[in-house]
Every structure is written in C-alpha cells, then in structure tokens.
Amino acid sequence: MKLYPIESGNFKLDGGAMFGVVPKSLWNRTNPADSNNMIDMAARCLLIENGDRLTLIDTGMGNKQSEKFFGYYYQWGDHSIDKSLKKHGFHRDDITDVFMTHLHFDHCGGSIQWNKDRTGYEPAFKNAKFWSNKDHWDWAVNPNQREKASFLKENILPMQESGHLNFVDKPAGDFAEANEMDFGILFADGHTDKQMIPHINYKGKKLVFMADLLPTAGHLPLPYVMGYDTRPLLTLPEKEKFLNQAADNNYYLFLEHDAHNQIITVKHTEKGVRLDQVFTFNELFN
Image 1: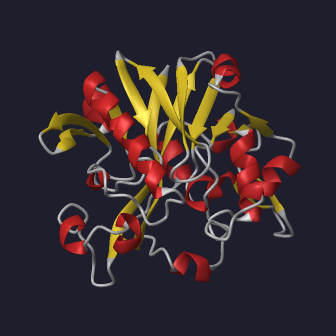
Image 2 (image 1 turned 180 degrees about the vertical axis):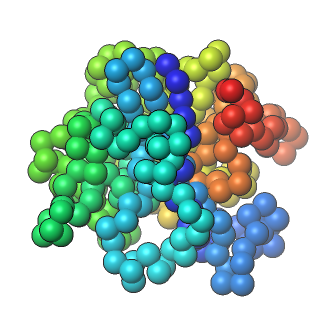
C-alpha cells in the first residue's frame, strides 16, 4: 500500500466562523487573518494505492459552481486534483473508490462535474464507487436550515442517480474488505451527523484523516470549535476523547484544512492536549 497527499485547492474562510466563540486575539496567533478577516485554508485529500484499488478520500470543492459562488471563498494558489494526481502518475479515471468523510461542498464538490454540453451533471471519477453512510446521506438530502447552504443537491444527488453510490456499514467492514486494507472509521456527530474520520495503518504508524473534527492545528484547544458545527457541545467530548487517544497512542493527524501544516502529532500538557511535532508528508513517509 502507498499513500499520497492530494492538494485539490486552497481557499479562505472567515476566521471568526472558523473559531466560533474564541476571540480573534487568541486564534489570530496560530491562524493569522488578512485585512478581510479571512484565514488560509486547504482542501487536502488523501489517495490510497492498494493493489488494483485506488481510493481518494474527499475531493475538495470542484469547479462547477458559479463565479459568484467561488467569489465568497477567495481561492488562491494553483493546486488542483488533476495536477496533484498527475504529479504522482495517476489520472482521475484511475480512481476506483471515492470515500467522502461527509457531504459538505468543500469535501465532496469535486466528486461531480458538468457533463460535456453542460446540460446536467456526471461523476468526475467515472470508474469509481462513491462511499458515504446511510445516516449521513439521509441527513444531507433532507438538510436542516443551518446546513442547507453546505449540502448542495448538485454535488450529492448525481452520485445516486449515476448508480455509483454505496453506503459504508459500521464499522466500515464492507469498505475495508472490498479494498483489502486495514481501514477503520470513527463516526463523529458534532460537526454534522455521522461524519466519518478514517484511520489507516501505514508503515508502522496510525494515520488519521481529520476532516472537520480538527480542521487546523490551531483548533487543538478544546473550546476552539468551529461556528459551522451543528452540535458544538457534542464536538467538545468527541474532540477531547479523540485527542487524548491520539496523545496516548502517538497518532499522526493528517490535516485536511490546514494550509500550512500537513501532519501533526500531539502531546499531553498541563493545559490539555497540545501540538507536539509538525511534519510534511514526505518527511514522514519518504
């Protein structure tokens, strides 16, 4: 098995929204804001090559939305899924499985694209199965008012209409078995219902794809919870339990949204679990 970080594109989000009730004077130390109060964000995906299976975890925003839509997110840099896949010798048609941690647009938008004449939508990975879970799917296709703007029907419904949609059974036995790999899932409900946090054993290390349970290294203190979380008081114990396990067992945390830190480890301190070391993917595994 081999893993590859896939950079699908960088963008910016409002720092206040990303840190909820935490004052800017605190979060600005780790995630400095620009003059518009926007902070740097990544959409970093993970590619798993395992035999004849090629699995992509999350797909970023994609490129099918309007110019007005993307205008809200201040995209920067020149990353794209296609460039990143090509860098590692792959093409999107090689992807056999797309595993979506959850169905917010910045995690699954790249899964679906316009068709050739722009009259409708089609899978952006034509040979891939798409993996979600039934509880989260139902949550996404019948969205609450809080998350309605994040669950875009054009990102979601074409997966089912294409016949490529599959559901993971807890605790991911069918997905892991189909892909013949050691792949575990933590289900977390604070950010959105039944978000899936993958755990992968790789080269003697446990790598955890953090999705929105820990967006950036700056979110390590327990009260640093995103304003986007639907159940922030549930995020707190979920995050506390996980971070204690991560510190106890030396997990390597793959950060999807941190534009400046790819992988971190954490440690116990008098103030709680805090940052220990920072690694690039190449430093750690190559």
